[in-house]
Image (tube, rainbow, N blue to C red; front, top):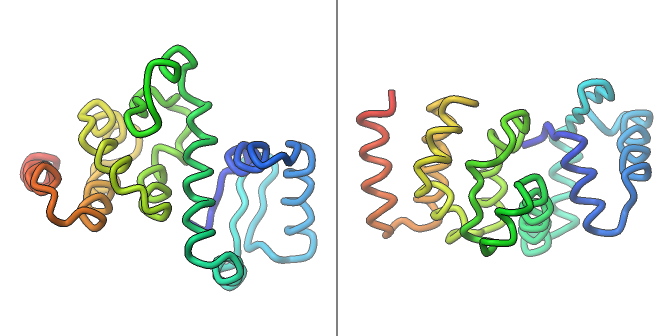
Length: 173
């Protein structure tokens, strides 16, 4: 997505050794030199122009862009309860315990996993019925269905995903 939550960008950049202050300063600088479509410090959102986003993706290259997506998902795991993190591995972490106020992640976590080419992690995510239920209530049924579609695009021969998508489509609305 072109609209990002500044706190999540800060979380990602912090994992790469950039201070929260520097990350927010960089967002303000992008806004000041008109490289963003919108910037709202109070709501903590930044929206890149599509051309700028495309430029960044081209400069990074496919593999590096996918790695950045994986890095973001890993950095966001810190938003989960610490006791849960110590009991699970990266692919099985219980994203259904993500704080409800993390609307950006509820909406876009599956997308970031798909862009990071994390087929197994995304399949595990959408197979978690607690996650699907929470996302349907917090965001929407159609966006939950989009996560299932993303998982199926990465694993088209996964029978469990196919059955889940069929059942969700029939009973999810």
